[in-house]
Image 1 (tube, one colour):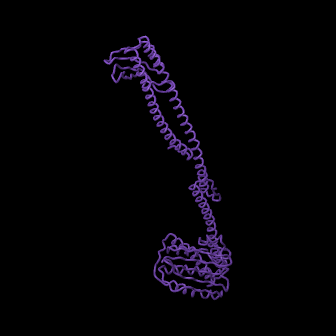
Image 2: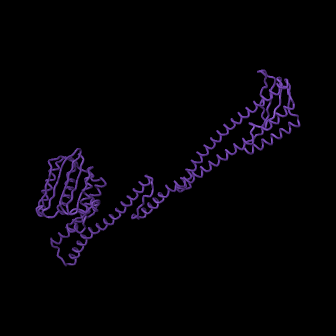
Image 3: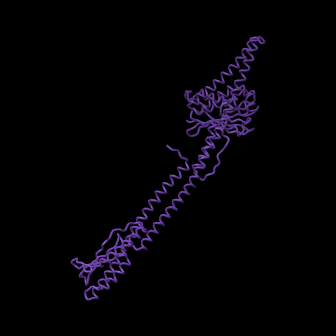
Length: 463
């Protein structure tokens, strides 16, 4: 199947529809015009023949019921002006008067030439001799009949033929102008539609080869195309963001793996070369690095399972407020070490969830709050229940997060401040696990933060 551009397809489609509509209207108009014009000619011709009948009746009556040859020949000349001739029959259908044979042949030849000329002008063939018979009466008593002869179906005059021919030419001109206007309009509308789509096609090709930096301008007045442009620009932005995150992810994973591996390699080489003795302290250092790698890989595996919904939730009913109190006790030594004030507002609230996973979520969030809150700072849990949902907030007045970094903090290995996280041992995957667990419970987690003021995480769970 031959492929066409959308511009060509639109023009062809529009022209096809235009030709069908204009053609149908032209044929219908021409047919109606012919019918009405023929009806007009027929009525005019019938009226004219009735006038000739009146003249014949007058000739007959004024000549004491006899026919005047001179007057009949004079009337024949008048009928010839309207491309007719006649003969008269008696009541018993016997010919009373007709043109002499010589005159009759000459008259027929004249009418035939006229009919041929009209046929060429009008565009219709007038080669059939038509006879119309009308009665001759005196006081409602028939005394004969007159036969009118002409080439038809109607006795058109040259003026009639020229009129109908001019009308057809005008109609044809209007149809051609309409088609030309349709072509111009089709070209304009197809250009208006195809040009932005062409830009969209070129833009998507750039996306396929990994160029995400360009954007499409909104240059149309068509809502659907503008929506498409907005969607593609957003897609380009998201792809660029994901590409940058992948680069960052690769860099972060490399760093997270390189540090413990380099430490292990150095320690093992020192042990092999005899520089170090295999003391419990040296072996413990190696074990700690291996354990760090194991936890890193384990956390990555856990995130994958949660995101792919392969990690089954063990649902049970428990008191969420009691769980918060328990976690606060577990962190009491670190809280006292930084002289932090940690509070829990709310009351006993029973929820149905995976208790171990929720423990992990709250542990991660409290651990982060403690890490990034200065000495003598404050951390608060706020637990409340609204219609059909449970809301838990964890607030701190710590370092805060820059607005530009908020959309990415739940991404794997994303670190708000890389050097700061390195110093306190962060791996940048804790919040990814938190988000995965909450979403596995059909809930959601959001974050609000201001640099230097503090951060608030809000967890919403269905009840």
